Amino acid sequence: MIYSISIYLVGSGTFSFVIWIAGAAFFAVAFFFSGNERWMKVPGGFRKICYCLIALVFVVLITCVIAMLSHFSDKGEDNLDYIVVLGAQMRDSGPSIVFKYRLDAAYEYLEKNPGTICIVSGGQGPNESISEGEGGKTYLANKGLDPERIIAETKAIDTTENIAFSMNIIDGRDQNVDKTKKIGIVTNNFHVFRGVHIAKKQTTADIYGIAAYTEPWYLPNNMVRESFGIIRDLPLLY
Image 1 (cartoon, rainbow, N blue to C red):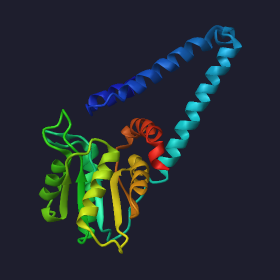
Image 2 (image 1 turned 30 degrees about the vertical axis):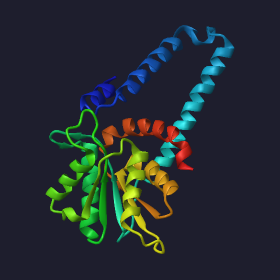
Image 3 (image 1 turned 120 degrees about the horizontal axis):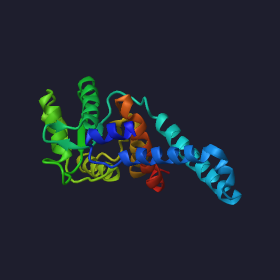
């Protein structure tokens, strides 16, 4: 419950804090049934169904976590043709902390690789005063990057569209079909696995992950929420 409150107070615009309320309720019920042999009084068939469901959830969650961890430290490689920064919430004061970490990772890469073009992708949500693409471009330009190196994609509303619309921009700019393009996907460490695998399904370019930082306190919430994203997008990943 304490963790749920801390997630709620971040005000990210999502309802993922409800997951932790549900977890607290589950363990409260488990605690109740653990006393006075109440659980053993429950019909055996129902107990077996509960065991199977708990095991299934555990296996799915562990599988998703292992998949995420496999790309947790991706750093791409030098001299990529493009990097695509996946959007996240923009606030009136600037990028949200999650988005800021992605943009800072992009800035660090672009400083070291002056020939790389950056696409910042993301549309404008109902609670945003500016599109994520434009807000991210402004943030990077204010840090000293040449605006000519930064392209704002302003229509995407989710990860799949972030990548698809960005690839359309790249294909429209680069007509050299004989060259295999190298493209980096910049997002927070827990999100790289899904971003990279969606991108690999949408293009013949060489795709690399570039993992941005996430505050450790929020990693459990982000990884559980990302597991739902992996399950939903499974047909797009393989």
